[in-house]
Each structure stands twice: as structure tokens, then as C-alpha cells.
Image (cartoon, rainbow, N blue to C red; front, side):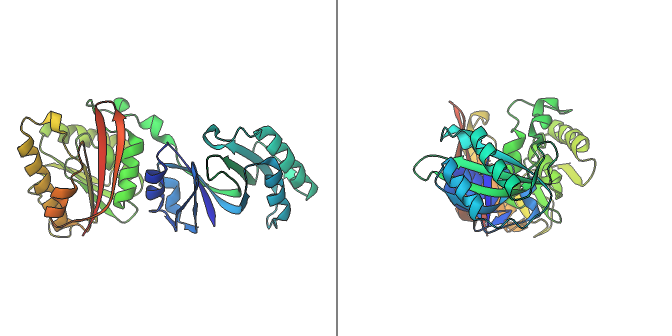
Length: 323
């Protein structure tokens, strides 16, 4: 069993993303979920910070943390460090006291403490709320947090409204991006989703109706990936690809306020969803409204719907579809 530390504030969305790199994901407490198993793809998750092999759990007190460790069999050798975390500052636990008490117990059991470069890291996670818990585990995986170094404004080509890399990575993961998979974004814009999908090891294909976006997306993908991508000019409703040519489709649809005629936008998204249904068995569509009904009309089944508030005048709706 493993305990995963979630990023952001939307645990439902974070847990759903984690399901694409872990099995039997279950809510434990605010900011924490458990998983029966994890894959090496866990390090590609956007809304998970770390995964630890669970030793035990109890109520969020120093005494319970000590009791959990005391009862555990420690089947490892080498130096250790203890890191205590008050998840989202929900418990008020004295993390230094926790680290001191658990560190002393580890020393008594023959371990050497090394805070700089330990062989093993023991994480003591305290989360409050109605389901407050203390969970102890050995750190086994830490996700790449390089999203801040890939901000859209630092790319060779930038347009206002570009999606932040953290959400783009989560969408790519939910869509099924991974080594050996081919991911299509038929409305790729500046290429943000394709960049994150490509960084997981997937082959990526992008289309955009605007030549400017095609050139810009190519520049951004070349800068971020080097190879493993193809971007062409085309219309999302008439994709120049054979049936079942890709594994998954993911796109951020134009927002209503950017479209002169709402009916035209609805028709465009519907046509894109029909084409996606021809090409793949899975699709994720994002927009400023939930596109579940057009997706249903195009033959898709809705697997999940999420809404994520961006600011006062914009909420992004994420609809996950399967054939």
C-alpha cells in the first residue's frame, strides 16, 4: 500500500489523475490518498508531489506517529532522514518534535541519521479535517516539479490565454499519454498540451487551422522536445488521418467569448468530437462550458466531468470521454 501527497486544492481531480499511474486510489484525508500499487508513471503526475510506501496510519498526534513506527518492522539498511509535514497546515502539529521523536527511535534501532543525502526518507504526514490522519511511509517516488521552468511566456512563441503547464500535464496524463502512445491535439494552439504529453514519452501530433499557430507550435515543440512530434495545418472537423490512427485525443476548445457566433463554435466542437471518435477510443475536451452533450451526440460516453475555476470570469470544464 502507498500514500500519495497531492498538489493543489482539488483532491478529486488530483486523485483522478493519479488513477492513471496507480491502482485502487482512495481518499485518505485532505491532500492525501492511498493506492494499492503504483507504476513508474507516477513521477509524471502533475497533481501528486510524492508517493511513499505506507508503514501505518493513525490519528494525527506525535504519540500515534511514534507508536506506528515502534510497531513497524523496518526491513531496510543504510542512513535515514525524517521529514514531517503538516499537510496544508490543517493540524498545527509540531513537525520538529515529530522529526526529533521519530529520529531518536530510528537511532535506537540502529539507523544513522543523514539529513543531507540519506539512503531512505521516512515521511510523517499529518492531515486534519473530519478524516484527520497521521500516515508514515518510506519515500519511493517524487514527481518532477519543473512546471515553473516551462512557463508559457518563456517559450519561443507565446499567445495570451495559453494553458499553464501543470494543468496541461494533468490533461495529457488523463488522456493516456505515456511511452508508446500517440496523442493528438486537433486544436493545438501554441502546443502546450503536446509539450507535456511529449515529455511523458508519447508521440504527439498537432493540428491548427491558423498558419501562425502551426509555426509557433512547431517552434515551441522543437524547443521543448526536439523530435517525436508532428504539427500540420488543418481543420479539426476534417482530420487527415486514418481510422484509429492515434491512441487518444485531447484538446482545449475555443471559448465562447472568442467566437463571433456561438452556433459555429458548437458545430466546430461537435465535428471535432466526431473525428476524434473515428480516430481514438479516448478523448479529453476542455472548454468554458461542458461539452458532454455534443460528445454524447457524437457517440462518446462520458467517464468524468470536472470544473476548475481559473478566475472570476472563467471556469474550465474538463470532460473525459471513452468510446
